[in-house]
Image (cartoon, rainbow, N blue to C red):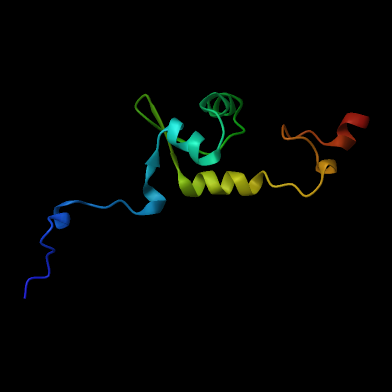
Length: 91
């Protein structure tokens, strides 16, 4: 018996979800943020991990989800997003 699907999908190589590369526009849509925010976060070095392929910037969903998890807060007293801590500001 032939195990190859008749619709021709065997010729297509599907990319595993964790290796799928997203453009900055797709990543911004996924995170519900602006492309500008991601560009500025790349410049500051505090955004999600990204890959630079020639002149193109690409993200993976696992990296975006890890960054989101790292940004989680349970209280406003945990410090600001830029990493400064309230205690440091008082000294």
